[in-house]
Amino acid sequence: MKKKIDLLNFVEQGGCSAKLSASELNKALAGLPKMKHKNLLVDIDTHDDAGVYKINDDYALVQTTDFFPPVCSDPYDFGQIAAVNALSDIYAMGGQVLTALNIVLFPSSLSLTILKEILRGGQDKVSEAGGILLGGHTITNDIPTYGLAVTGWVHPDKIITNANAKVGDVLILTKPIGTGVIISAKKNDLVSDDSYLAAVENMKLLNKRAAEIMMKYSVNSATDITGFGLLGHTLKMALGSNVSIRLYSKRVPVLVGVMELIDLGVIPSAGFRNLEYAEKDCFFSDTLDYNRKMLLADAQTSGGLLLSIAATEADSLISDLKKAGEGCSVVGEVINKAEKFVYVE
Amino acid sequence: MKTIDVQGKPCPLPLIATKKALKESTNDEQIKIITNSETSAKNVIRYLNDNGIKVNQQIIGNSYELVFSKNGEEPIIEEAEEYCTGSQPDDKGFAVVFGKDRLGEGSEELGKMMVGGMLTAFYETERIPKKIIFMNSGINLVVEGSTVLNILKKLEINGSKLLVCGTCLEYYNKVNNIKVGNISNMDEILEVLTTYTKVVNI
Image (cartoon, rainbow over all chains, first blue to last red; front, side, top):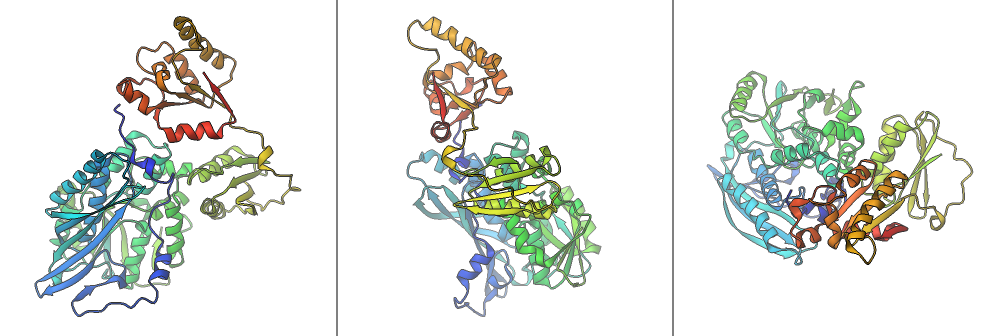
């Protein structure tokens, strides 16, 4: 065993997810004038993954940013995960990565080799995504924080939003969930090395290949699963598309060790917050296991894509994803708009 | 009433403690969780309510006292006892700090032998330290070649947490030789030294 710096020591113990809650953010944004422009194709209204700005009839820019404090122990892993997480929003819109800028906050007391490892992780993933890193901006801060601002492009007619799921679609998820539980358990030394490392590998996996395969099909709607959890992002898709979605909780793939940890009580605050946000629009079946419900609400870092595609096309998409070695599980279906937006069974 | 004080413990540790207490309690035994985090209190209440258990919540100063029982009935709080944090008995047990790899001053050989004797005595008399900290040459006790690895392992199995100073391991270039315990940092060690009322310095 080699002694290395553990970046998780910099994060407030158990630090219940760094994201400002959606309701607080809405309060801050309330009253600010909304910017409108004829070229603005996707803006903040639909809570989509990235903004899209049309340059001409064949070309639109997709722009997004994401950064956070450490979610894992190793600096190189952290750099990779933060970058993959930021790049993912481009893929969720059906876009391709062009350029990225580093966003860095770093303690002046910490060794620069650690910073170098974080940046190397980010750069490696931007390269893997086929993009170019242009530079960035670094300021000092007590808690190391890293992420990217990413620019991609998409054909204006091929934008995939989270607001176009159609009745009769099936929902396919490309990565297992439970990273929020694992990170929280790791901070408190409650997780086995095996499950922790499996979660890190999962978070380091780019959604690039899954997105490329998705673009070969007429996928109606897509989003990546991050801070709002599978439940929250499914709800956003249902709300945006004005349909209802049935989620099959038992078919949702889970990272190794997660269910045991939830049973122990490792339920991060972000999970409770997500549940609070989503539950008024959800119906939970009587037979739904409590631990499964909390799993669905677990905030994800660098999660997979949730794809909504016509049932007739789904089989062939699934077989393509499997051939490419990507994960894929059918986790739900789109039904006629009913009283609630999401029905969890 | 079973009282569990999780003040200062980050989430989700209060929830873990709550679930454990429920598992270990009888149906109508009252359980009291004390936390000073509003979020933790909220999450614990939410968890209990979701599982059909009513909670009696009292806010005392900066802390939240949650009383409930497994059968779910909202407990009628027994006449509140005088509560004063200052006079609460310390239930943390004690911590032992090895700042060197031998006991006392004088003969080095004797000092090294006595370490083994002392650790064995801790074990045999069931005075299990909650934390054992190893600093400076104390780290020699947990690395390859130490003659007390077995007894330390036994103490660890019986509930001692072994914290080994990472900087010291690095200084002596023995990071790769550690055989028992966890590599720790000054933060964690200070937490023990400043919150334990009984710290035995060797």
